[in-house]
Length: 129
Image 1 (tube, one colour):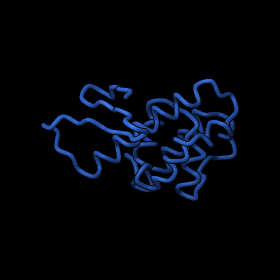
Image 2 (cartoon, rainbow, N blue to C red):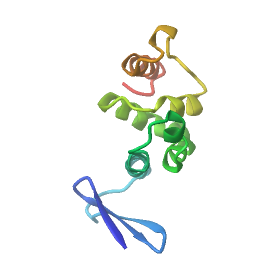
Image 3 (cartoon, rainbow, N blue to C red):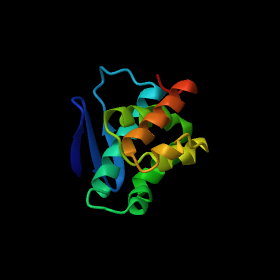
Image 4 (cartoon, one colour):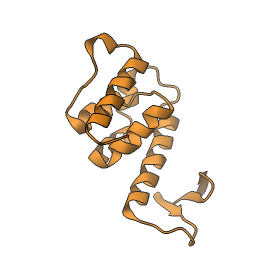
């Protein structure tokens, strides 16, 4: 069993290859909360898996990143929140989930400009404010 703390209140255990999330009983659980927690777990796993990777292809094909993509549109607000905190390799996931690419030609190759383009798109779509 491997215990890891997420935030202040939650612990994650791995028991017999199953992921177990320990949530204090005083916390009310709803579907949105579970998706957000699952997303945060996957992001942490993704960052750990790809910490020493230098190629974008390796970073975006990691199992945790692919699982985030499989979350679909549910993951979008969480991805945009991550982008506002720290620009990272979210552009592939965003394109896969939305089938859009609002990055201007003049922004390509500049992670900060690409982030701004995606955040503006998200605001105009009502996905993130």
